[in-house]
Length: 273
Length: 329
Image (cartoon, rainbow over all chains, first blue to last red; front, side):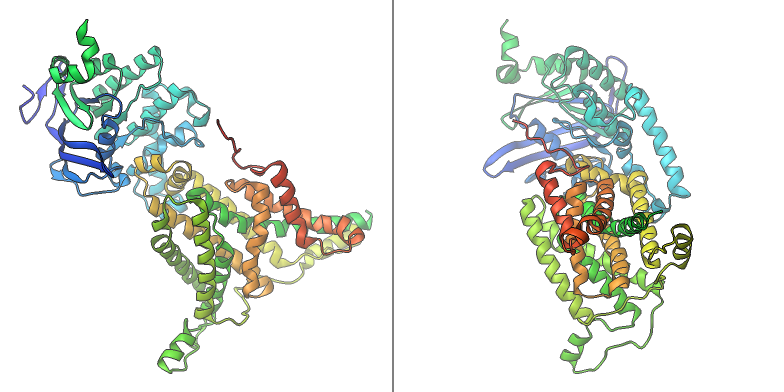
């Protein structure tokens, strides 16, 4: 069913579109260590795509390749139908790929609202001159972007802490603010690096709900790395499994769960009982 | 009103105005340090270079004339025109932006991720290089700077205070204008950082490089921007001090006065630079007036600021407004 080039409809009725990003034969080395070995994978429009694997499997490296933080030695990245040249992370962000970090990277000294507003930077076009005068287009642009930011703050239910400096927030809330900042960019692809790491059960449930809502409401394509298998199997449409830098499985949660290689490498314990 | 108190008031007013200028120089340091972690030793020389360039352009000097004459055997020195001050300031700003671009492109872009001490060493090199280039471009003779700022005693203040206290305050018009301009500049910079797109990006870069990249901010662009802003601040400082005491090498030494200001206010805080500048400006003048001149034989202004900075280093190394230094184990 998912082989159809134009997309397909999931069991719960969501429309999954054509392939928006394709990684072809990516190899990434750090000195003599191969973090990613010849991996190919595709990401379809509107889907929730998970990357799983044991610690050190190369999941975060993969995400960093997609977001431009690492440049692979071999392989091609195709985005929206054309091959992406090697580019800086900020250029990737300007192309509509937003991300969060495993170890939260927020602007600690700024308020929540300011943090979310930085997510709008790629949508602001006025030059230095008009910005400095703060008249005309610059002012209108600020207002329009502020509205988007406020909408996302509402959506993620962080209105109460809008003006609070980020450094004062709890870990769980910081993760949510980081998601808000990434969402504010209205990205075509949203990359989440362990969005639920270190959270308690309640916070995990909240975050899962937000991820599903974001995908549902805005139709955002989401690529996420997560360790909690329950969460991954519940959330994602398709799952890539990595181990020691190699891809050992790729498919729906059901397919992956029954893939012998995956069971051996990663889910072996669950299989035994 | 007793004469002593009137004296003290006059000294305080003068101190406040000197303080605003210290703050202005310190601000140049803070801008660059916050955004890139570079302590720019060359800030003072940048002020000198900006002042030299401005004076040279106004005067219609041919840049690099000595070099040109030596190589080509010609004898050109002046274009024979005088550029209006306003236009000359704009042209100088273009030169400072070009300098910012060159510094970022040729030096610091290649040193990203290096130890702070290496970045610091690079700025020392930059300071001497700029000093040389300034001489080569515009010659090493002392120039006067005249962009039309008013100078001389302010008659109105003199008369008013004479009527009120029976003692006329001596306050220089230039100091008044300088402190108003500096105050406006500081307010403008704070508003720029707070409310504009580029300002927000600037604060983002100052806070976290990775996160800034992830929201689409080009670090290179922001670094060029902060070096340009620091160049602008240096230009304003250069105009003020150049008008006051001529454009000459000693102008670059005002940067040394900014160091105690930074230690007092904290290297990362714009309000800190302002408050620190005011405290040192008023402090050194009052100390000289109350303690230095009567009991210590005078000339305390030269070292008071550094002594205060030393005391701060011992008891509050992060300064008044700096980020607290916490080592987590």
